[in-house]
View 1: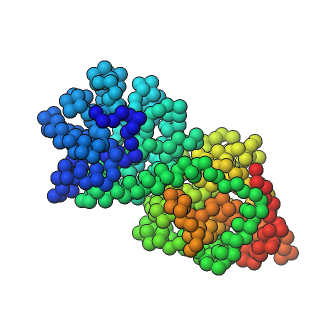
View 2: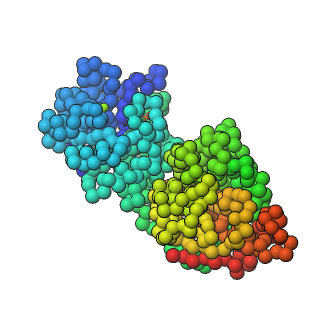
View 3: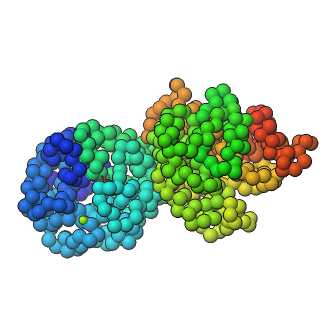
Length: 529
Ligand code: 3NM
Ligand code: MG
């Protein structure tokens, strides 16, 4: 054996699957090309072969892997691993128990196990395995799954259980070059524990060009590894002046460039959301059909997903995935998420399908997303006075969801997981019209689109932006959206031609339309905590 566990590079872990080879591609040819493309460890997985055939395949694979100095791991079969002196074995939850395998295998044999729940991880730690495969992270047709998908968001908590151990971790299941960056970024614990790599079958094996397929993944891994630690350490420090000036700069840019704000929103607020977008100087498109999501993702701007009436989940999933690919902001407004189990399940499904750049909700909605009982909801409305410590709550949920979190209410809170911004503008008349929260979402999406255009502008360094799922400063974008609407609401409520909620709404749109940077600057009540 060439490799001890400490030196194994788990970053691009290929699991074989001969039944997936495209017509005309020989197994060994495909494996060699994959190795040339940058695969760092290979697991031979033969679910349908007789022992003799498995042995032959393992022998031939070992010779190839040795040529590229890549360690070889055998799935399930201790006898085959022993016969070819493999570097390791990979054991599923119903395979040979680890403590038995250890009595059979030479000391130093790498042992990995598949884990999809916290108990599996706990057991793996007790068994002192060398690495775990966490999956399935996405749905896959390559393997019949015995348990529900873990989801990108689920990986983080399993990783956290490995804190303080030397056990490595890879994610597996449905990973490909379009979701690899999202998988790597999203699969991180609150404590900062990240993956050591990704394991794939079909994205490489089913390809007629496995070398390019592996290289594509290799490039994503390299970019991610390069930036991950830097990003986790370097958090921007904000002061009130920077934030306010940033917001005003975005306001001007939105009016100048009129970014496209693609909104999938509910029937109650569609019209007023489109009008609010126009009033800010941006361009709304309220498209919901799955078939148009790819085309729309290619146009610079931002995406709002508001699931107040969930009638087009497929479109919501696709829109977010394409927006992630295009590094466009995705603002998620989980309207009334606490109201029904269906909404809760759907929110979870959406948050697993793409990475939100901003999640915006009232206290009840945010509590429901965080599985907290501290604030209750009634339908789409929040009940009671809110969290005892809203600043800590919002910081934690932003950290957990790896995005900017916005919690609206009499006081609005915005956090990127480090900085917390407290905003105290607004007027109680906002509570008298329907969909004022939804308009906040629209304004946030509009400002975030502005932030993304600013980051993409010529002359700005694309460097660190490359590794991100979204370009631009989402914290300032989110603050901008909240401030624009709440300041406009103050101006509208003070008008002598506003007599009630009926005249308040058009006045609000007017005030957004006429909002001046000076007004925003002089009225904004911003605190940075
Ligand atoms: N194990 P693909 S998912 C071999 O969840 C395997 O433990 C999984 O194949 C697990 O990359 C899986 O083609 C198949 O989706 C992964
Ligand atoms: Mg198995």
